[in-house]
Length: 76
Image (cartoon, rainbow, N blue to C red; front, top):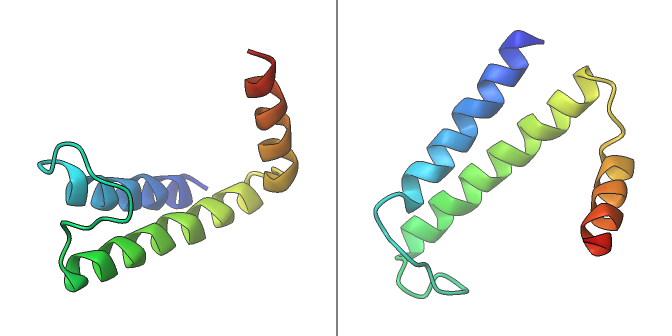
């Protein structure tokens, strides 16, 4: 499991590097080139895939956890 968690963190890091020096980013990424937009999509996909795998390894029902979190956030 340690490896799965570490890889997930690495993927989040790769995604964050894309945005690190761009400051505020407008909705729809209008200032991104097509190649940069594709790169964002690839990194988001990597993060999602590894996150789902990590939840599976941890035996966390991710859909239920998201629903619980949304309820908690709505109550704030």
